[in-house]
Length: 286
Image 1 (cartoon, rainbow, N blue to C red):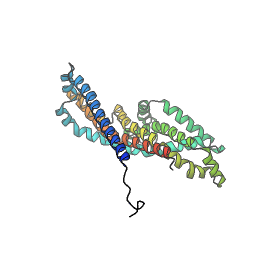
Image 2 (image 1 turned 60 degrees about the vertical axis):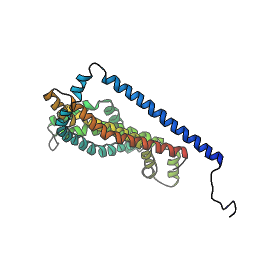
Image 3 (image 1 turned 90 degrees about the vertical axis):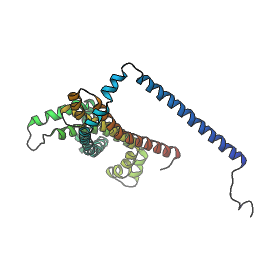
């Protein structure tokens, strides 16, 4: 067998480099682990050794009250999840429609463009909680025929209206980030502006804004708890009801755990997508 046919084996120099890199990684992991244990241990020790820790433990971390309040909070949390699942697709559709209306240049679209501008400006300025109060208590008072009066319905509408204004701006930033040469190329191919937006610009824009969109939906998931303020029996309202009756705040910690368990995977997905797109940009891939 000639030298060219022999399988490749790393040289001694390369093996030495690999060994150095391996030792550096091992040392980094050890330092990071030690620093984390030191910081977390110090924080836990500081909290546990504080004078009021027994009172906090009894008031906020009582296992008995956690078990007793768990079923009602679980039922209420399902309402939060249902509201989130209904609102999310509506927000996406409405936000994209508002963004496209703002990007339109056709004279006939001027009224819609004006409505989109006013919508995003006004509803981004109104706190979501205030919007929930206004729609839940205001719309049924109009007495319109055929219009639902359900608190759940109007609370969901308030979330859709509020978050669609934010999502519309996210979509608009994505659309404006697409290079004008893409539109010029579509025009050279004979595509109308509508076709260019549909087949060229919007697909690229949506791909770029996925991470910020997921961030908005993490916020939306948490803001479903605002409906407790209008007496809708969600997770937070269930916790408040139990806490007021038993003079113990452990159910609030249980609610917090519910939301953390649901939002952390979505946050990690957002980070992973952000890294993936950043790596693609650096590599010059599609």
